[in-house]
Length: 254
Image (tube, rainbow, N blue to C red; front, top):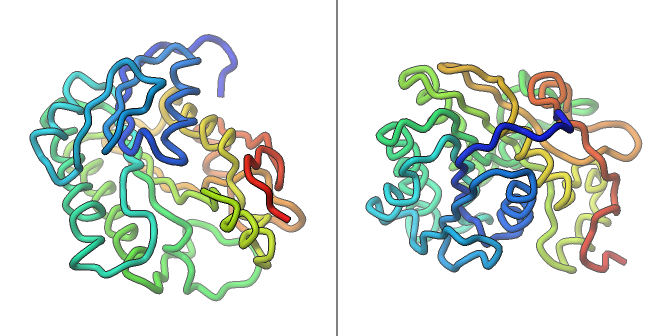
């Protein structure tokens, strides 16, 4: 990402008070962007917040109005019952965001996917986007659908769309310790600082262009042998990770 002062954009961040949304909003503000949040509770860093649920289409339209870029992080973040838990935020909520983005004339849509879309691949060595998807639970399936929906909105509605297979961002001490014990955990770690830096790259990069979609993996610098191919994010978005596990970890992990 260019270190020079970027052209300021009007950016909506859904899930603005979450584990990723909070540092992303703070970093975007620091780079001079005008940031609005949409979440169930206010992000105290933001002067401009819409408090509401993704299932409320009127609230989503209110939040998206006059935005240049939408970073969609809001979702239920774990596997759960599909009909009773996942359907509203992860399926209907995403549809509301995409439809509102088109109606409001948004230029770029950044959609959070997950590494869980590849959890069933069973492949050794470096995994590339071209290797496809293999979800093993309903949460991951909602993220496969999110990628397909984003690609369709780029192609049909001329949006610039970035689909982000987010690495492992620990949300508490238990998750940090679990990551440390997992075979590939340090290689797919995504620090809060790198997440903020990455999504700023998504806002500020000239690519992808209108009508184009880009699917990328997003992690910090891997330890040892890389597990995920970060080259598309580097080449197209200018993203260069700065942390290596456990750098940037705000929780105890031992």
